[in-house]
Length: 104
Image 1 (cartoon, rainbow, N blue to C red):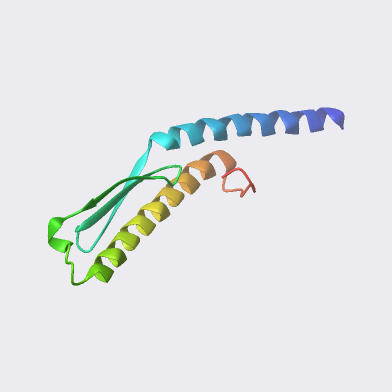
Image 2: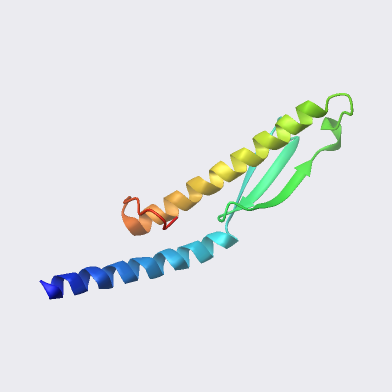
């Protein structure tokens, strides 16, 4: 019985090491999302951090700031969503699709 528990603990430690390595690698991976037909572009990394935000001059209208705000929110939210999906995809390779609370 103790031997089986030892194997489980060893496997858990190996999985944790793999997950830590993937999390480090994901920090360097990037995703991009656009809104308004490419008028606003947001880029994020695998840690769900916004890295870059580009706004085309043509979409800046002082009379319609709300539209610009909506486009920025849409692009940023889509970039974060893509980043989360990228993380889930990479982590599921290690965990076999098992959801491990607190790991990611």
